[in-house]
Image 1 (cartoon, rainbow, N blue to C red):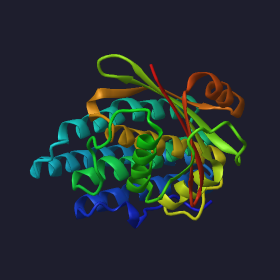
Image 2: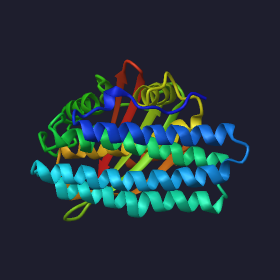
Image 3: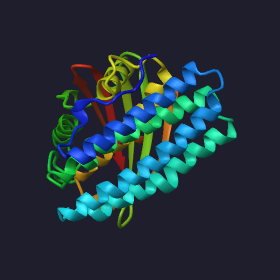
Image 4: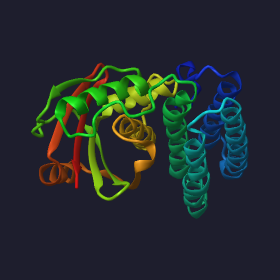
Length: 290
């Protein structure tokens, strides 16, 4: 397996931050190499993960100091994201590793989630620090197909540097290639919820994740799915900012679905069904508010 590596496309243009990000990707890539090639990898992985955790926390502090130094208006929200990653995501990942005694599949899961979270975070929250992407409301909060399609295309260009063409504003479930399916639910400040169903073609996920992580392709389906989930969470968070303020909603449920589960939810829960095409593959986006 070719290791996860730094991609210059992830640079935000702040040298101290870019160097730290590159170092983080190098550590994650080294972790995967240890698991794959060292016979007694468990102890080595434990040390690497402790080092990765320490380095990540140091980087967060350094990045937060930079945001304060330039008077970044989104500092408080950005810091909360760092804190949640430290206190929730990382704790959960470490617990899973410890319970399995660092089983290979869980080390792969840890590596994929770390790489996916870092990639999504850099391409959304960190790029916003210096104004590389729009991070405020620019579209009306609406389920109008054209408004959603415009915002979706904007978010795809911001995060993945891909054009997303709306090929169906009333997707009826016709077959496309094999997909990863996801179900995400958000609370809205002041009451209400947003439910989102996603169908991401495997080739789009594999090529897209590979492109973002400096690989020609990621071949292990579970790792692609894990990394994709984290990148998509950041993508959807950024998409949400284009409709409403950052503080008005939060993710409270995320899950992978089978094809049959997706079809059942698709047929019964969502009134807006859109099919997009990019040069790397198709993307199904279904949404409902209640």
